[in-house]
Image (cartoon, rainbow, N blue to C red; front, side, top):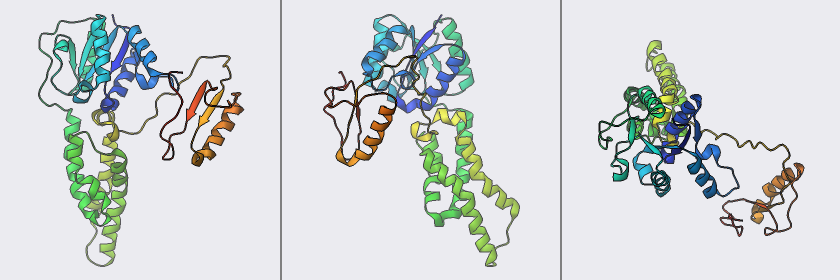
Amino acid sequence: MTENIFMSYSRRELGFVDDLVSKLEDKKYKVWLDYRVLIPGTPWAGQIDKGLKEADTVLLVVSKASLASEFVALEWRHFLETNKRVILLIFEAVDVPTELEKYEWVDFRGDYKAGLEELFSQLEKPIQEEHPVPEAGFKAPWVVWATIAFSVVVAVISLGAIWTLFIPWFLIPLPYKIYKRSFDFMRVQAALVALPFALGLELFVRASSGGVDINYVYLSLMLFSGWVLLYILRSPALQRWGKPESTVPKFANPYKPNISTPEPTPFYVDHAPQDRVIAQEMTTMFKKYGHPQADSLQSAKAVLVLISKFKSNTDAYPSQ
């Protein structure tokens, strides 16, 4: 039975992975997921190696991006070399390396709930696959197709706000971009929120000039169509579907060390002269919590590097 899981994936599938890990944790599995586990300011290589060694199963999210990643390849090859269990999660149907073709797989391209149930079943008891891993074909949940269809309607409606320029600029290509998982969520959200106001203003201006009589049923449909689409785009199904730029921005879980008596750490803020104001604020805050300021970069145990347009590197060595 699987207990400790290592998630191997590309950042392009972040929305899908984030939701999946939450479901796994609800089932009491211990999941190693980089952005939830990695400790800031500590070299990552050792932490990742520790996660690989402690896990007994790797869930490899299969997509074009993940299989093209050399870091993902290092992770699943480590498990193959140590004879640990690998389960392929099919996010996109692509050619998989020959070494992976014999392993268990779960198809997540269509029904997400059915995919979850199959994955939980396999985690409890390994199976012998009767069919080869799917390496071709396109599937999408029905809600994605419904959203694409509804976004076509909203795109047509947005032509009524063409005088704003930016609203149709983002909404007319939206159906295709949903299909490609690559719409810019924040800009689309702004356009959808603004759409009802732009349409309402347009109609009232025409009505006040005697150009048209307002059909309030039609007006209501137009006013709320954009907000309905925004609600759908924020739904879990569409958040799993899109690439990171197509999802609601989220913050990773903050690192909460279980340290009852933290030790003061000599620190040094490495910054450009133009960034001295924020450097001084950081220094004041760290001193407030008992950390002494080191006299030089070399004598510090922790170096905070402020990266900006004025500074793009540092003389500090992460290995130290």
